[in-house]
Image 1 (cartoon, chains in turn red, yellow):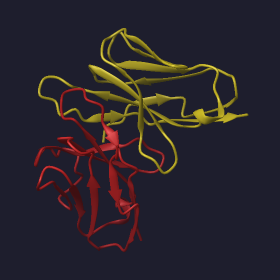
Image 2 (cartoon, chains in turn blue, green):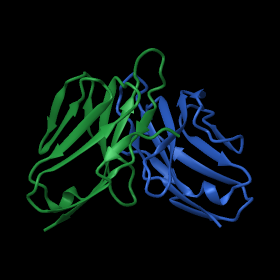
Image 3 (cartoon, helix red, strand yellow):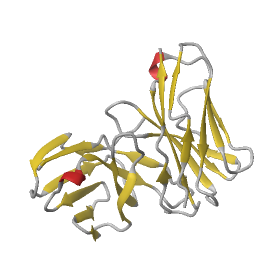
Image 4 (cartoon, helix red, strand yellow):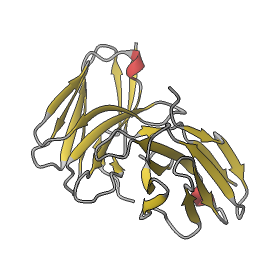
Length: 114
Length: 114
């Protein structure tokens, strides 16, 4: 079956621009996670959705970052006024939503802010 | 954000050798996981551990959940070239209203020479 997909696979933008990153979770998965992975580091948690609501957004670094999941399936991570330090791989994962269920990761979107 | 301490940072070994890596945390987790990440891909789950002291195997991989719940190790026996990649530990809280977010280690880069 289809896994988690993310688009675009690569995004190059200029400092100050707005970007949107999309995640399509595995069908039927109610839980969705966004992580950010900087070069040479492990992924770091950003935000967690259970259904349509953000159950935990404690990992969002500042108010330039925002994510939505309006219909409980596809999610969009939005970054305003991008900075060079936002350059990283943004990973999305989904799970069935029960405690301890395996999180399945997408291939990520590589964001480069010039 | 929080990252777990993982060692060694990198390993360069000959095919057939055994490999050991470990992960430590200042916090207690009730689940420990080990992931492998290959270039251009998201992390893929290898082994999950749910009980302190638990020893679990998956083929040539063996992992243990430390008694203190603050550490875990992963062993790979008889390494082969396809074991190449970056290995990450991750801690998780799955009870008490926690959000199932993963706290990743800093990663161990494994290179295997045929």
